[in-house]
Length: 573
Ligand code: ADP
Image 1 (cartoon, rainbow, N blue to C red):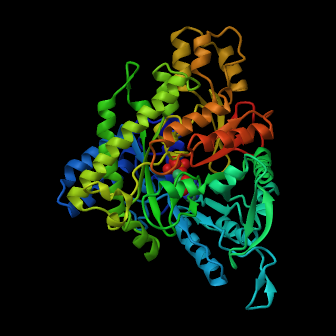
Image 2 (spheres, protein in one colour):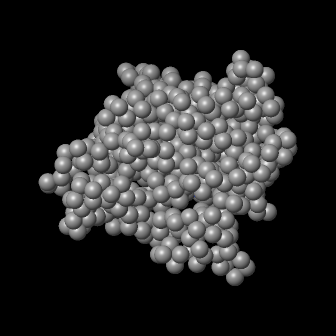
Image 3 (cartoon, helix red, strand yellow):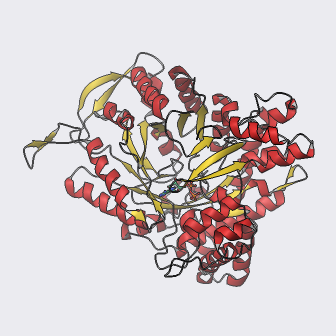
């Protein structure tokens, strides 16, 4: 088989070539000479062995959970986040994808955060920071009688350090930088990534308050507040500021917005959340970490129907797995260990939603897709909570349970249980559509890792077009060129409807799907609202408004062609 050639070891799970490529580059263990020494099946064995050890702490049956965990991973029904796959049983042993570090307004505070970032990146995690506590540019620095350089200049140091520290040679680190909308340097922050090559290892998000969002509906102004003094200095029209955010995002995808008051209102614990992890789906308190895992929905369709019974089983098993991960985790810092163990947040989500819809003959662009998204996530959330409550009875609730809003339950093992991750690489391993995103294109070149490129044609489209006898070499060429079937003459209308890609779906529908998942997700939802190249700034503003009004916790837009992307249409080479 082709995959074996890539792997250099047996392809015991019959994975796709793309999956083999990714596993070989980053996941499978190697010997001192750099040769791959484990098969994909053995990798899952290593993870199952390691994670199931936690069961012994609570008198659980290690062997039977080992085999249940192994089965769901080998079946590609559930995968944990990359660090769990990479680092299980290794000395490093850091298993979480998401971290948030505090940045305080002093040189030691800033450089502590920088050092801690380096340690986390080295261990495979991604870091989020709020820079809102830093005094603005040109503010006084009493110690030196000088002036401050401001949040954006300090972010450059974090960016450069990220460049230098490769994560065990496997991937470069990722960061989220957040600034409150009422920080005096907000304008500089909004435009920071418009300069070519600047802050390339950062996603940026503006933390928008409810006050700001409400005032932006009309003529209202907000005060800009110096975090060092707490004093207002300057006012800005909210609508104009939102317009600037939209313009920058229209130009290059950054910044995103997070609705910070809503995030805090939904958070069941004391303490103020100021930041999220790099892709935005996991708001966390300072020093918290969280491990994620995703159920592959495309594996659960039988004869056009979702297998709800297996889904319920997988949810229970996955919550148990993710809770076990916390006990097996090696935390990079004592503060992180303390913050994480006292709340035990986990983030169970899904991938393969778009592939599932296609198999169920439901268009992503339809109201049925929105209704099903709600029903599905409601179901997952209910079963995940119930399992966390059972684990709470068996193993004890998370230590801060009594001070949380969850104390109405009799017990609860985890302060949060659900998150929708992007599943950027684990969805490639699982051979399915990423997270809750629609198909990006039906055929495309994927740029992975350091410059490698892979051509992919949607296997579902291939299969369906073959069944109908319309899959000709000409069609394949046209597909590779266009990426979408909408403009290809002579294709059946129902097929066109079913195979709408990210850019054939309205921005409003992208937001409605995100909101449907958010309704039943404790943490947040990773979703990109794709816009066509010809979309306007006012389209972006409408997306913001809709996302806010429908209860999303944040929103990220991406206008096609507006900056270098991970995914390219067939002709976007
Ligand atoms: P995966 O598919 O590899 O498990 P996701 O694409 O679902 O990862 O991303 C989940 C989270 O993992 C991100 O929000 C971020 O916190 C972290 N992450 C992703 N990519 C990186 C990276 N290159 N370096 C560090 N952390 C990352």
